[in-house]
Image 1 (tube, one colour):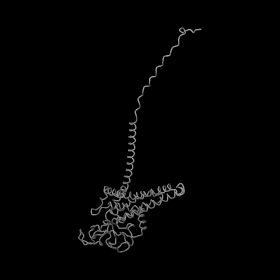
Image 2 (cartoon, one colour):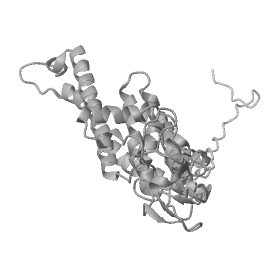
Image 3 (cartoon, one colour):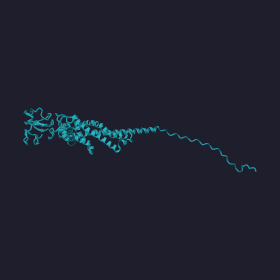
Image 4 (cartoon, one colour):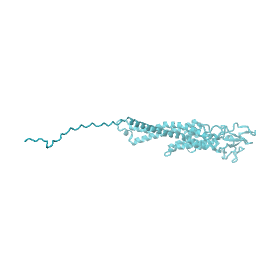
Length: 370
C-alpha cells in the first residue's frame, strides 16, 4: 500500500494524507488479497481482517467489539497480516492472458512471466479467483505451437533428405511411372514421430498434470502447509489451484523451440512452477510457508516421472525374466526329449578259420616214381 503520487508507504497511518507528498488518499482505492490486511480500530487497536472480495472490511462500518466505538473502514489503521510481506498483499496486475490485450501480446507476456518472472505470476494468480478454463486455453495454445512446429520440422527434414538422395523419382528406382515406394516410406518415417508426438504429448500431459497436482497437494498437507492458515481462511493450495499453477507456468515449455537449450525446458518448467507456487502461497499465507509449498510442487512434478521410470524398469525386468524363464524351459524340454544313447551291441563273432593242413614231413612223403 503505497502513495500513488510518491510511492511512500501508507501503512500504520491514522489519517488520509500521505506524510511525504501531502497527497490525499482513501482506503477504498486500494485492493488487497482477502484476509491479508488487518484494519485496526483507531481507539483500541482491535484488529479486523479484510475479508471482502477486494480485501476490504465487510461491513465497512460497525461498532467495535472491544471498545464499542463506532468505526468505519476509512478511519482504521491498516497493517499487513502477520507474516505477510507489505508488497505482496496488494492486488497487482492480473495474469496477462486474462487481459483484453491482443492474442499474441497475451501469449508473449504470459510466457515471459513463466520464464523470467514466475514470482510475479504467482502473485497475480493469488490475486484472483481460480480461472481454470483460461489456464487450460493458454496451455492448449502452448501445446498447439509446439506440436505444429514439431510436425513442420519433421516434414522439412524428410523433404531435405529426399532432395539429398535424388528426389522421389530417384528414390523410386526407375522412371516410367514406377511406384515411388522408398521415397514415400522415407517421408512417412520422418512424419511418423511427429504424428505420434502430436497424439502422445497431449495424452501424456493430460495424465501428468493432474497426478502432479494431486501429489503436490498431498505433500503440502503432510508437511503441515495449512498449519499457518487462520481458521476463517479458505484452504490455500487446493487441487484446482495446483492444476492452475502448472498450466500457467507451462509457458516456460516454449524454450523447447530454442536450439541447444530446448532440452532444459522441462527442468525449467519444474523450477518455474515451484517459484510460482511459493509466491502464490506467500501472497496468501505469508513467507513462512513458501519453502514447504515449493518443495511440495517440485516433488509432486517429479513423482510421476519417477513412477514412469520405475514402471519402465520393472517392465523391462519382467520381460527379461520371462525371456530367461522361456529359455530355461526350452532347454529342459530339449534335454528331456533327446533320445537316450543306444545300447552297445556286441560285435558278431567272427567265423572260426578252417584248419589248415599241415605240410607233410619229408620222411612221410611218398617218393615220386621215375
